Structure formats: C-alpha cells, structure tokens
Amino acid sequence: MTTFPERVFSGMQPTHSLHLGNYLGAMVNWVKMQDTHDCIYCVVDMHAITVWQEPEELTRNIRELTAAYLAGGVDPERSVIFNQSAVPAHAELAWVFNCIARMGWLNRMTQFKEKAGKDRENASTGLFVYPNLMAADILVYRATHVPVGEDQKQHLELARDIAAKFNNDFAGSIAAHGHGEAFFPLPEPFITGPATRVMSLRDGTKKMSKSDASDFSRINMTDDADAIAQKFRKARTDPEPLPSEVEGLAARPEADNLVGIFAALKGSSKQAVLAEYGGRGFAEFKPALAELAVERLSPIAAEMRRLLADPAEIDALLARGAERANAIAAPIMDEVKDVVGLLRPKR
Ligand code: TYM
Image 1 (spheres, protein in one colour):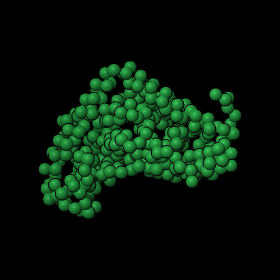
Image 2 (cartoon, protein in one colour):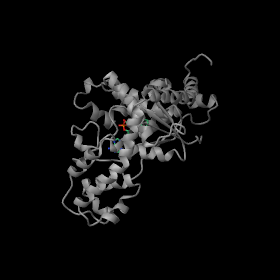
Image 3 (cartoon, protein in one colour):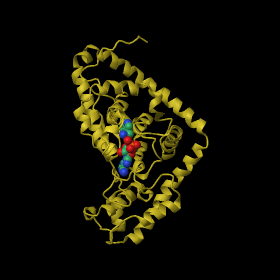
Image 4 (cartoon, helix red, strand yellow):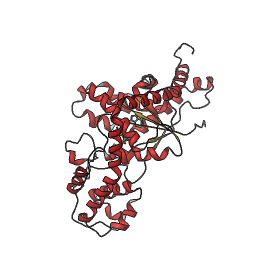
C-alpha cells in the first residue's frame, strides 16, 4: 500500500457569520491539530456561490470568515489560510471529479436534498456537484485528515469513494507514471469532541444552523455578552435537574446539547461537567454556561473587530496563503493531467 504523509485540510463557507456549532464542531479541532500536523484551512467561496450571494456581501463575508479563523486561533505562520477561488487547481480537479463521481452517488447526498428542498428543478447544478468540489479541495493537496462536524460525514465518505475510484480507474497509468499503487490517499474524517453536532437552542432535535429563521436558535461568534446571556436564558430545557451520569442525558436532547456545549467551551468532557453540576437545575446551570461562553467568545469577537478594521491586511494575508497553497496544489494537478492523459504544456 502506498502511504501518504499526514496533512490536514478543512474549510468553511463564507455565507454567514460563524456560529457556535462551526466553532466547537470544527474550529477548536483545527486549532489543536496545528500542533501536530501541517494544516491547510480554506475559505470555500466557490462553495458559497452554489446558492445566490450578493456580490458585495460575499466579499465582506470572505474577509469576515478569514478574521474569524485568525481570531479563533488559526496561526497564519504555521497553517496555510486562503480563499478557494484564488487557487485554480480546486476548480480544475473538481471538473475531473465531475467525470468520476456517479449520478447515483450524488443523488444520495442528504445535504443536497435538504438545501434544494422541494424545488429541486430550480437548484443550481453547482449545488448538485458540490461534494465533488469538496473532494477536490481535500485531494488536490493529498490531505489525509479532515476535521469537520458530524454533518459533513457523508461528504467525506463520498470523497473517499471518488479517491478510490480514481485510483482504480487509472491504476495502470498511475503505476506507469511512477506513483505506485495509489495516486490519492483515502481521507479520514476527524470528528471528535463533546460538540460534534451542536443543536438548536430552541429545539434539541434540530442542528444549530445559519439558515434557522430564529436568531435565538444559535449563538453567533459576534454576539455580545447580553445577547449570549439572553439566548442561553431562553434556551429550551426540561424541568428536571441535570443527571450525574452521561447515560442520564440519553432521552433529554436539550440537556445533552447544553452539557456538550459547556464541556466543549471548557475543554473538558460531558462526564466532568456532570460531576460538577449533576443534581442541580437549569436555573443554576444556564447562568454558569452563559458566563463561560462570554469568557471564551468575547475575546474572539473583539479580535475579529480589530482585524476587520484593516481589510487590506486581511487581503494581503490571503494572497500569501494562496501562493503557498498554489505551490502545493499546482504540481499535483499537473500529475493528475498526466495520469488522466490530458496533454499539458510542460513547465
Ligand atoms: P459549513 O461552512 O457548513 O460548516 C463549517 C464547519 O462547521 C461544522 N458545523 C457544525 N459542527 C457541529 N455542530 C453544528 N451544528 C455544525 N454546523 C456546522 C461543519 O461540519 C463544518 O466542519 N461543506 C463544508 C465546507 C467544505 C469543506 C471542504 C470542509 C468545503 N470543502 C473540504 C472540509 C473539507 C461546509 O459546508 O461547512
């Protein structure tokens, strides 16, 4: 078996300001992985335009998400930070993958069904092939590990299927070009921690999401202390006190969600939170949770505001990141063309 050096890739869509689900489900792990891996973190602006975006707002959101990465602890010296459309190899490899992935595979994607809703005929074709671009994002760097929240698991499985089919379809050419048995690694999802699926504060059975009509359903990373406290105060709960063991959360989605959020903010586990708060009611737990959230999130919001005051600095940082990303991706894309048999001018 061909082995690939470990490399981390992940991305977020600049379609909104970040919420607590994005932060706890993904970004907390991104920051940690910088200590052990080479990491590439992308602002996936081409994924954003699979649904309509006002141009000026999109540009603003790209800068704002970059500021959130930086304020959240992504270090532009150690990690590569850039926006997807600035590195052409993403779109080039996505086209090859459009020709590898099967209609049947994409038809099974639950996120497409959710996003397209009832009016599938009117969804953009980009939305349908969205997961192929996502596979290209990862594989154009031969990334091996992908830290994401639970909701991206199916897309990661598709990326593995695409990598495996490419390796299989082109096995002869891959070997003939000196790449051994496999051209692409099968990327591993890295979905871990107490908050891989943060739920709505209004309904513990629904994911916390940017598209929920009620702003009370989510904590935005830019919410001020009053908004955070008010949203947790109004969060739906049941009347029982907290259990002392994790098993006691099983049929209590709202309680489970708040305990998971507390644990993730604290960097501990649900069990550790219940060891402290088991037997106590929400009247006590909610203010403690709000205080912890403000303590963790307000420095991030303040740093975002500071960074956004100088958009030229953010643009320069993205440009440097795109250069570094391109230096990795372009040679791999050249190799893809050779393997597929697409004639290219020699560099
Ligand atoms: P996006 O922008 O919807 O979300 C960004 C990250 O946040 C996670 N997430 C959550 N985690 C826990 N609880 C929640 N309620 C919650 N909501 C969102 C997501 O799982 C994700 O990790 N398709 C991706 C972006 C993407 C990508 C990639 C990711 C494009 N190319 C390549 C990894 C690798 C997306 O739409 O994420």
